Length: 265
Image (cartoon, rainbow, N blue to C red):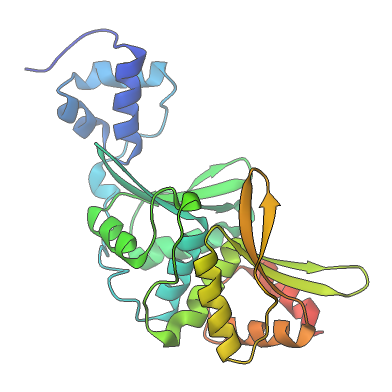
């Protein structure tokens, strides 16, 4: 028998809303908590949950095995991007995988959406775009590849993928957490930051093996966290790095690529 009451407590609504925001439909949320559909809808709206009602079938990932085998440069790129700007989360009500980028970079999320073949909408808010899916299998695979919840507080390494695709993985990560600075004098600095020193050490070893020299990894205060930073300061090494990461790419942040072109000109 469905529980039918006009109003629920704020704590109850928060619990319903959290489950609903994970991508479950309103109908499934009502069934899960054994509450009346129409009353639930009214209460969610009352507390500001105005997300369009979607069926869970529209939220489920069609290509749930997309990251099972990193056997293309596009998969490696998106895996790297998820390491940088993505997140995975798990609650008692389900799992969520998401990634947020600047609004001007929305085309990257649209490409990912096509790759994994889902109908989920990309949400725009102010200057950012966000894309998320609910998929238990993909969540497990991404965890096995090294993406963790609260990764800002963990030490992790580059995932164990085919070395032929490492350059595209680094490109994806660089698009998320890399930086190119060109001063008025023409002097340029390329850097990659990460919460994990082990991760940057893996990148450093990979680059050094290909005769791309880097500075020693440093620790810097950024906002409220200490971050590890890997610098490439000489133009020669920056151009080698550029040629390496863009070698096999057909998807990347145009704005960062244009900055690399400035260095090479």
